[in-house]
Length: 169
Image (cartoon, rainbow, N blue to C red; front, side, top):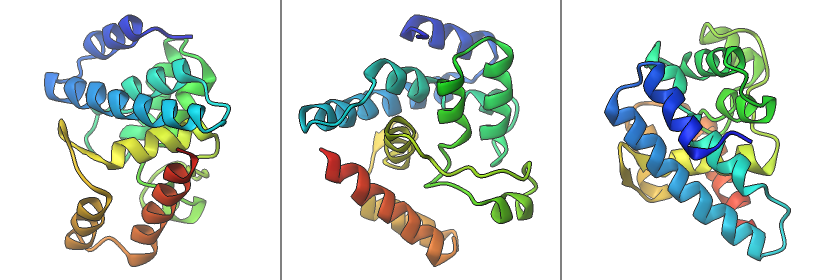
């Protein structure tokens, strides 16, 4: 499994800005906390996978800060030999997932971007609760989404993911 040091080195070598790297570290910290609670509650969760995926979730931001950063990160890490499970976390971390139809409308490759594994869900949820390097509440995230005129069904998808992930811990 990709180690913390390897993940951080990849972010730096790829040209990710220091603020992006700090955001990734904070998301990883929160994701590990969530994963440890889930594990204590009897869930089968791979802590190493959660940490690697969370550290690399925004690796595509070295190429773009748009929504395509997930696809760019997936391509970048796949090309660097990162485990497929980690690459899938990167690809599926946006919000609470994107459908094939939404992906097409957003100009992304037509694919299903919904987080499926528990590790994918934990990283997506943790990312939703970190703005920059500051942790925010779910309510704050939902309000930010509404202020940006994100469709209500997408807002509710983020809320549902939070309820699912928090229910494990």
